Length: 299
Image (cartoon, rainbow, N blue to C red; front, side, top):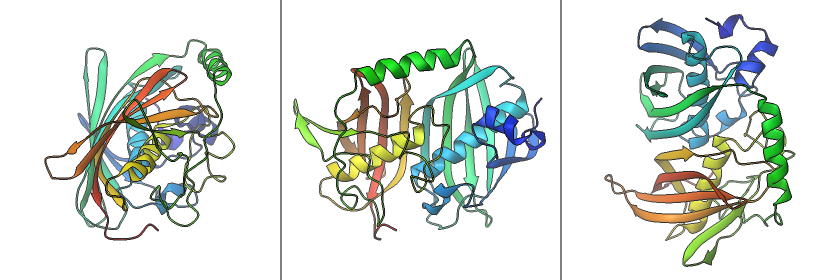
């Protein structure tokens, strides 16, 4: 089975999308993999965000899940993987990033997934994350992606005018992807666009990725920005949990809509907003965020 630590940077780039790995295996046994995490902010600019920010938790789960697939042999050379569902709940109030994680993989039929608990050096649990996805053979993936990108760009409309970053819950220097919301057919809608030129570090302060498509962290960031723009009453929000289902790739440089579909209360009494994300007339993702009011101003 492949050992990510023994790979060359080029091999890691091919397997992970990055020349370095955020997760390293500390212990491996049947049904349980323990990880340590690399807290180098030069390599991982999203570590400037709070430890429970959905972008950070998405990156933690991504590196943990893909590394687990590599070391367990479930992701063989010549195959690709796709995340289809993720859910998370935040624990505690500590300010330190996760340094350790324990992942428990599962599989059943054509489905496979994991449960991941992450904690800091003091043992304080930060979040519990669950994910589901699938692996598939690389059958001319690049050609298929080129056709999908071309079709989406041909149908692209005008790029949106981004909303005020402060209104979208961002601090000074924040990069807002989302427009001011409007009402259509009784639903609140915002338009977003993430470009290849401005959607990734260093042009963007913290987003990283392969550059092939809008990734899950981008979509979670956009949903959180939209939540701030559509919240009633307005105010700074902290995301304490959520769920997401990814149906198809969202393409770079093509506008997509974020439509508010539901607004209710969680069992803990927090606001829960559900969004649908559509691009070029198709539904691409569904995201629900559990939110509470923040006592602090954005960093």
